[in-house]
Image 1 (cartoon, rainbow, N blue to C red):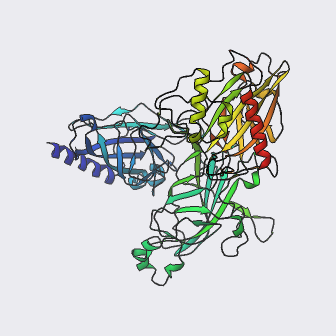
Image 2 (image 1 turned 60 degrees about the vertical axis):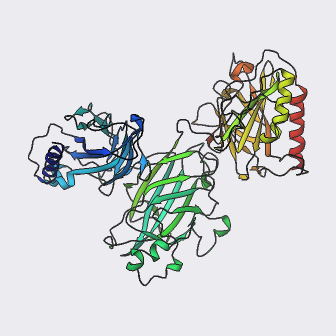
Image 3 (image 1 turned 120 degrees about the vertical axis):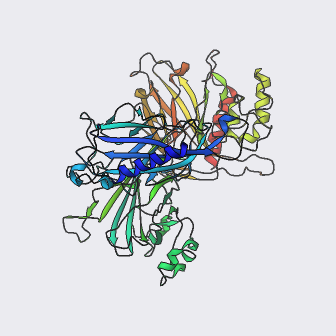
Length: 640
């Protein structure tokens, strides 16, 4: 019986894919369907039925019944059974993830290589141009046949469309009709040939600037548009989909020079006359890194505008001339794509940096060719051959660890509240030496000057002195490479001030660093900063942007103490005082929370904040410990 049903489904599928467009359709937009076709139990057999794995095979079908073509189509499938997708034909994952991948919380598919679906009007009902079918194979957990693991919903993910409620099609599938929403403007250009260029925190342009029968030159431009986003030591990766390989580059370089896949594969057979010892990379997924500034004027590797900056891309609010990075590469193609016009960008783009935000990139979208000034000096523009845009946005995954953290202290409380336990993640091999759940212990302010590994004695002594609880085992460290102390310095009738200290506990120096604080109530009263450049950031509400003064914008790495045999290591540090006036913020209560930031950023990464602020129950003048911290920091800073 199961075989009989499967046979009927297969016949229907073949019929829909080959018949003329003469059957009735109720959907006058884009019709989507998800059909489960087959499944079986996978080894191993486990005792918990909810964790038993099963193979599933399904088909997603898109059919454009509308009057207009659908460009760069995307479909969201709301999986709900911890699905692990192994293969999918005719698509890539829109977030840049390479298969196999976990998709249990739902995923967006983007069409590749068939990115567009034409209408019946412009094709006379040719289903091969109007329709696409995606065959899925993967693993699902806890849904044993004959039960069928259907997704909760499916919908078209393109802007400008509105989908009906998902309907069932028997027990083995679901379908939905998506129509153009007249209230939303579709993202196509006026000539209806290319998609509009989109906005995002980061955009990557893939421009083909020269093309030949067997290879082409592409220029890749990475542009930062986020006022608080940045990248340091960026690494860019993608997947070649048609066995391409990189022969030469200018302005950047592969992190690994690897030609083994060419020499021992079909590319070596195709290109018998190429000396592969001079080829740069044959990996399916290469990783590209920026070049150092010393290579900018190199005739062979440099001479590309905006290249060679050690992988640093600053926010435009900091320096617009350094918010772009660019490189060029020569790409060799493989059969059957050997003609000048057969051009396709790589897929599954990802970019990341050191102690920077996490970016999620969408698929490449064909846009109008980029225009550049004519190199001859003639007052006209010259277009490239073809252009694709990749849009990347900053994400904060739920439960993900931060990369920097903040401690709070105040003039009216002798204790400093350090960063949260495991704020930036905990070591996997911690054993029973520390607790991941115990709250961080309050500290004497001078303990913030020493690495976490050297704070135990100070923390326990302070707890004994202040009658504070000592967990057993003691809490794990924050494990953050950068920490920031916000100290409420003064509070008087007409204004108040705070002191901010940056600590670098890592091995990486930070050139051109910046920090930003969001003050929900106090920001309008910002007056000035004394040892940093600071300004209220336009376009980002209640945010104060700060960076080092010229010549002092280098946050050095941690170094050995004066006597490495007995002294703890010393973090790199910088410090400044920031002042506020109360005139624009009447009713502000500095000590009860308004004087502490609600968000803190370092180099674009949002830092972890303490869950409480220093108590003002027993107001005191500057404590000896706070004065010691200030004195020590200033003395050490002057010595460096």
